[in-house]
Length: 178
Ligand code: HEM
Image (cartoon, rainbow, N blue to C red; front, side, top):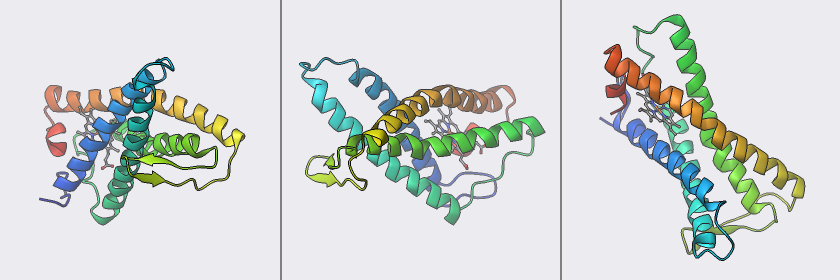
């Protein structure tokens, strides 16, 4: 079933959730590896090209995920959850949703801060929308770094809670997203 129901996520939300999760985790690993490469490494340029295109794809998927939430609202949190668990889950979901946009958008600003676009998946080009700015570049680098690495403990809490509610409390939480 494509649409979310009152108790389960539909195919569209599930596919987008796991594609975005895999994309964010993969791009974080790729980014950390990429900045450790030396200028003469054969992957120095290739890794950046893949990281940029992958990041723009995650941004597109995040836009679809958010739009789909409006078209087909998420199932309410499970009734078994205590008040503090509800508050925690909602806060973590908001942080994850925000990071899906902040991390790739700051990457876009870094990559276009010289006032020119960059190649996307080979033949296409992502245009620069903002004028050349060193200040924007420095700010975007800080945001990209803090948001990307700051997201890791949030993902760990989110995944840990999903696994605990599935396997320890037996609430069937993970099944809603599988
Ligand atoms: C980068 C990684 C991830 C991101 C950005 C992410 C993001 C999100 C967001 C925003 C929601 C809330 C959707 C809504 O508002 O309806 C959600 C729900 C969920 N996620 Fe993730 N997620 C990630 C990784 C994971 C992992 C690794 C697991 C499991 C091991 C997981 C399991 C779930 C489950 C079970 C739900 C549904 C919770 C419920 O409504 O009961 N997620 N995720």
